[in-house]
Length: 251
Ligand code: PGA
Image (cartoon, rainbow, N blue to C red; front, side, top):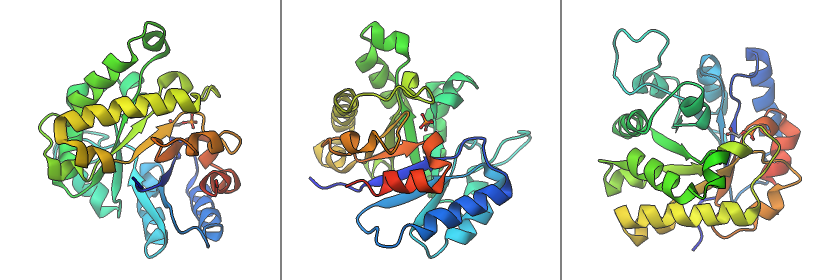
């Protein structure tokens, strides 16, 4: 089964406007000849529109790192799905572990955001993953089931075709401790089985599942070689064009 191969960069709360534009220029300059894989960048929200305008008619797609689920209203500091669209974004990260664990987002909010994204024509990149403590207590499969089922409650099969899942074990994010390819592959298998149970084998078999957590040029090859790993969501190593390009160009 050949699935989409997706290389995504999450810039988190890094980059000035100038740095963001230079980074995108650097990535674009190195992408010629890259044909069989998709590239997405998630800049900080104030730069999303400028980055999206620069990336229009190029091979880079742009996404927002987060959004709220309401259409509009008195929600100071939040960004609506329509605003994400208006900024030129095609994708939106939903339920990133920093949203869950720093800002206290729960599965119910993640679910509302996934549905809001889909109803506005956005393609959600749903992030799931266990804490170190949960892995050590052998609760990973249970946590993934709760997060995947919770996030996809009320989503229909047509909606599911627009969803990408990113498996990001919390203990591997920003820590330099990458999951072994076997650990990631195993978790991806669990996620694909859960999606298959809800939406059927056909939908599950084409779902792109990305791995995220300390992906670097020197560990991408092992991850990329795994059957269940359909790409990566890269934080720190996506902030320099050269290291992101080294990851994207993995053989
Ligand atoms: P990292 O972040 O690559 O810096 O570990 C990944 C992520 O949070 O998406």
